[in-house]
Length: 543
Image 1 (cartoon, rainbow, N blue to C red):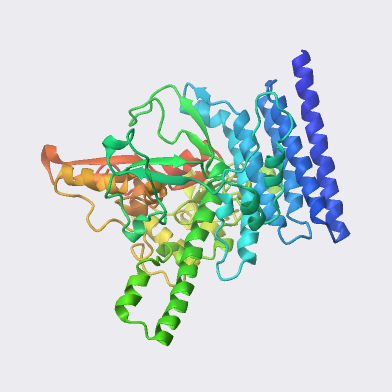
Image 2: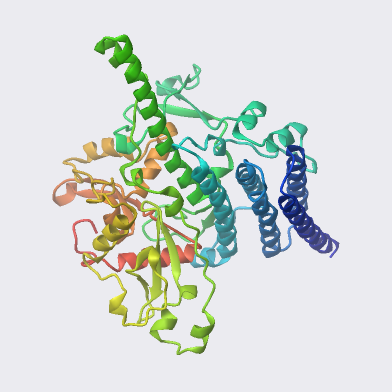
């Protein structure tokens, strides 16, 4: 009883602290001027409140209450974005990352008997992660919008800056606090030794315990540039990219059909799925622009000093140039990464109207919004006349309340999905020609002659570790061998295919990774709704 009372008091205290701090930040904003020392004092108060509430989590009693209190930390963080300081968004973004790490530290890995149990029980946690992600993404979008010539690379997001606490400690280390109080990327670099994950490799698998690994200093490979894992090195890492890559794991004890293990391989909830993708996209655009400028300056120097062509080519070997992924080259990141719509429930008019009316079934508050990861846009799903979830043909521009028959707004089976996706891409890219052009089409040769050839291809594209992990994840997200439409229609990613007929014919598949929703159940509903658009389920070559 005493522990429960202490926990309740701790929650109330943290809520009050966050409310007071939000009001204090708002007053600083209204004053029109704020000193850097004042901002650093605000950061210290916010971090100390995180530390104290983390310590209170030892008295676990009510997860719903805990998540509610953690969510309250976002109020003062959002207030930081409004400060009359050029780095207000930078400070707010870093505080979200600090908060996520503290939340992650207090959560235990959950175990469920059925996937349906996991979908229901994790809903509050998924909603908290969406709010964290949206708060961070808002700050990142503001920073990107304010940058010129794609100069922002967000390297400071991918660092392991956090609060280090031993069990029982309730005060931040001075050095940790100094790092947290950095008010710009350059100041953070001066006070922190963390620079993100560092890779090293062993070229000889048998030399892992005999020699030091060779540090890797080059760029992170990309599958769309043909940079595949042809070496099969053994990789080691030092440090990490920090909270931006955090995921909350859970386990389902009953095996699911089609999976060899106890759980599907994606039994985790990403804390910053859209923010991470936004930063990776921005990095590609930033890298391409910077290298383009370097090549432009080099070309002027070479022409002025009449440098021989062979010397020019040798210099260029040390300055490799890569365009951004074709799909994002013409994408306005700020516009594309729109805020995640919240399901608010039926509106007042629909609550009063007929239960099975067209307007009620397509009410925005009842609809499911799913972020299509490779397309960087939202899809909307409404309840059809047979109470099944159905993809809306209006796409991300859907306003709901369709007052006509379902056939006027649903995406039809057969070629309907391909046509819908092409329309959505055309809306974002006025130079769109085909899925192949933007890197989302199928491989030139999906099925290889032998299983051995296919194993080699899987090693290069689908199994890479170390520096290749991001490339592997991006390739699977984009649809794998079959491309985006194929992976959506089949609810899986084709990563291997070999043989022409008979016993030597086969495929290798992993779960589809195109959908990101506000909860696990919404994701499953959306994935199944898209699979239902397959014209000949179970009968095509790739089913």
